[in-house]
Image (cartoon, rainbow, N blue to C red):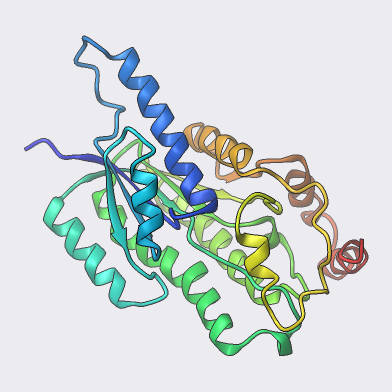
Length: 274
């Protein structure tokens, strides 16, 4: 039996997740054109599985692309959702070529401005959900497959007033780096994607929806989702362990290797007032 070649993208109803779907679809269109009249279909996806809470957004996305989309409306902060995913994988037995864990969110504010529920959901979605999705998908991945864990430049250092989010992304970053080494022998590439602020997604507006988000007032030099995703896919195809898709996040990554966290937090205290 020939297995379906699929990509699984979480957080696909908006932002980076949705853009990953669109750019993968364009890549598949190009490959289909190049392979027309031949049997060279090895790199072409048969289907993309898109996972997010907002089903209507996923259905809208399905109407905009040419690759077959399987809409899976689930809330990944709920553990029960993973039983559904486990059952689907077991039933379909697909060949997972891409796993892109793009689901996640952050909240801006001091510890007293962010509810326990939001803290729990950040940890559940940014950490547990990404790990659970990866654990479920890996048995269905083979040599040449790619795992993209959407981390953040916030994972490179502690960030006051973004503390739970940055800590959750530090977890995902370290998990990605270690998992990559474990999978080297299997030929499965793991890339930690660490962008700076992305201005044309819902992330910033969601992050500001707290009791007091004035601790971070501006987002200078923010990236665009198209550029982030384009760079991330190139870096993943190259097998790079980390993708810093932009100048700011690249400089930040280098700086944190040499400058102590206390000094970096002091620099952050100045920058967030800009």
